[in-house]
Length: 163
Image 1 (cartoon, helix red, strand yellow):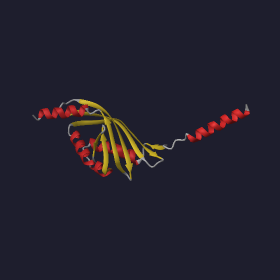
Image 2 (spheres, helix red, strand yellow):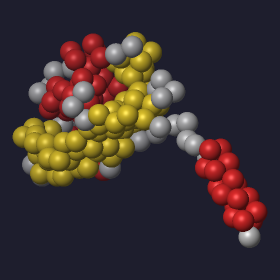
Image 3 (spheres, helix red, strand yellow):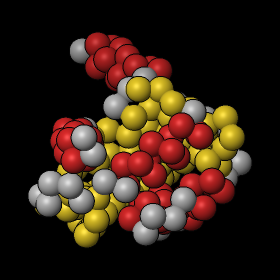
Image 4 (cartoon, rainbow, N blue to C red):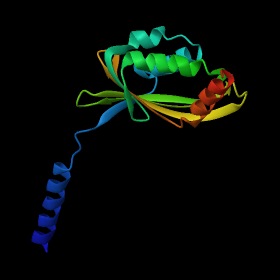
């Protein structure tokens, strides 16, 4: 019985040692990068894209709901989208940055935007999640997940008014 217990104990130790995860991270929510993601949101709301120009690498890969764009096209799209709305407010603004032990650094940012359309006059609420991969203090990958229907509806109303 002692032998069986010893073999079992050794098996548990060996298995636990071989199952150690190498993808662990330190998570911070008040570090510079987490605060930068919130500053990018504030700059968007304020219709000021200078911080976006500064923090996004020139070859930044952008995926807005899986549509790939480059930095220039992204900034133009965001400016056009921003022009469709007024009376912005942000709720539940939370971000944290994951400092992985393999050197990768990702910020996750969740927030809710309330905005009134300039052309429909409707106030809408949109939940948004963004992921920002950082290298040398610059965003090299920017991913955005949100429901685009509010923006599409407002752009359609703008197009109808300009006919």
